[in-house]
Length: 168
Ligand SMILES: [Zn+2]
Ligand SMILES: [Zn+2]
Ligand SMILES: [Zn+2]
Image (tube, rainbow, N blue to C red; front, side, top):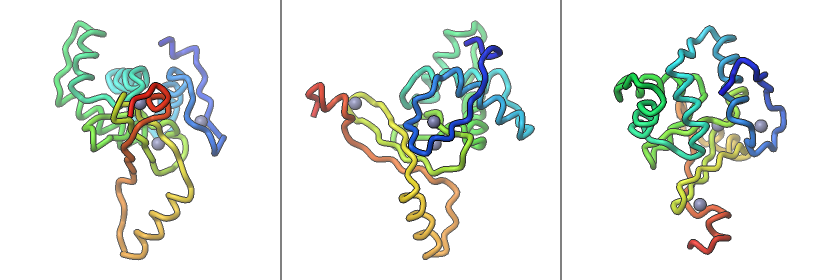
């Protein structure tokens, strides 16, 4: 990806379905980290690029393999896990616990809960933001005096494309 030529364009559409060009989202991640004084190192950026290019939840070992193909220098799983932890801490990546896999967050430029619809047939994960759900989680958490640290909702099922193709 020729990142230097790409300008990040923060998204202001509240109904956006996250259809952004991967290169633009990576450029946006770089400018967000810059503004926060966080170090988006070459390896961290490469992993973010791989996740955007993958288009579906990707496991750490898949990333290790993909990095091996891209560079001649192998990178060990602990290094990849540390990079993923950083990306998660910056809100750039979400972990899909049910898959033990990682996916880039469509809108790291705005605070939101991540709601993922995960297709059990093709493995796609579609991210939505829904203010109603976020309000509900906040209200319920307040009700029981709970302080949420990870707000990711995973819904399993079959995606529209797979349904149209006759799979389940
Ligand atoms: Zn958007
Ligand atoms: Zn998100
Ligand atoms: Zn599907």
